[in-house]
Amino acid sequence: MFHTDLLSVRTRRAVLAAMLTVAMLLGPLAALTAAQDDEPLQVVASFSALADIVRQVGGDHIEVTSLVPAGGDVHTFDASPDDIRTLEDADLVVQVGDDYEPWLDDLLETAGDDVPRYEAFAAIDHNLSEHGDEHEGDDHAGDSHDRGDEVHRWLDVQAVIHTVTHLGETLAEIDPDNADAYTANAETYIAELEELDAWIVEQTATIPEDQRELITVHHSMGAFADAYGYEIVGVLLESHSTEGADASAGHVAELVEIVEEREIPVLFVDTPGGEDLLQPVASEADVEIAPPLYVETLSADGEGPQSYIEMMRYNVETIVNALSRS
Image (cartoon, rainbow, N blue to C red; front, side, top):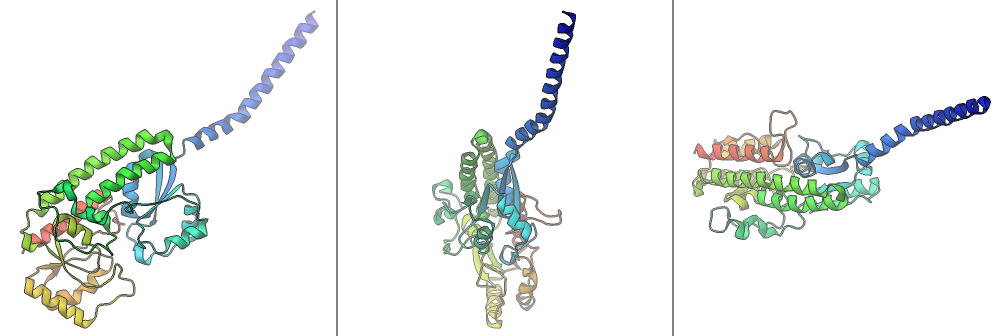
C-alpha cells in the first residue's frame, strides 16, 4: 500500500513537471501570438505631410512610414531596396494619386502590387476648393482657377477634413477591432482642422484683397489660393515640378513686368531649391524673396514645422507677414 502511494505521488509529480515544461515552452509562443494580435497596422504614405495626417487618424493602432522623407522632393524621389521591403510589409498605402507620385506604380509592382491603396483626395470634387455652402457668405473663396492640373489639395484644409473622415472609415474596414478609436481620432483631428481653417481665414482678412497676390516657383499653391482668397499672378515654371526645368529669359522678363506693374513686394519659394530659381526675377525687379514655404514636406532638421497643422500655420504666417509689409 505504501509502495502504491509512493508511485502515485511520483506519477503525479512527473505529470505536473511535464505540464510545467509544456507551459514554459508554450508561454513565449502564446505571448508572441498576443503581441502579434496587438501589432499596429503598417501604413505607408507617399510623403511626410500626408504621413502626419494619416498618423493623426490612426493613432497608436498604426505605424506610419513616409516613403519620401521629410525634406525630400516627391518629384525627384529615388526609391531604395528598403522602400520595396517597406511596401511588401504594408497593410495600406496612402497616396495623392493624379500622377503626383509617378514612381509609385512601378514601386508597388516590384513589391507585389497586392497592397490596398487609398488615394487621399480622389473622392473630392474639384469644386470643393471653393467650399460651396461651407463658407457661403464669407471671404473664404478666392478667384476660380483651373484646378484640372492642381494636385496639392492638402493646402485647402477643408479638403483634408473631407479626407480625414473617409480615411478613418478606411482604417476601420481594415481593422474593425479598433474602429471606434479611428472614429474618435478622426473627430478630434477634424475639430483641430476646423480651428486651423478658421484661423487662416482670419489671418488672410488682415491683408487688403488687392494685396493678396502670389508669385511662386511652380504650380503648387492653386488650391490654397482658391480656398483662402489669394490670386496666383505669376509662376516661374509651367510645371508641378522643378526637375529638369528652367525659365526662359523671356518669361523672367514677363514676371519682372508683372511685379513692377502690380507693385508686388515679395516672391514666394514653394519648393526645395526654388530660391536660386527665383533670384533672377527678384534681382531684376528689386524685391525680396520670402522664407521658403513648406508645401510638400515637413522640416527635416527639427527647426521647422513637424506636423501638417504646424506646416499650414507656418506658411500662412510667412505669407501674411510678407504681404503685410507692403
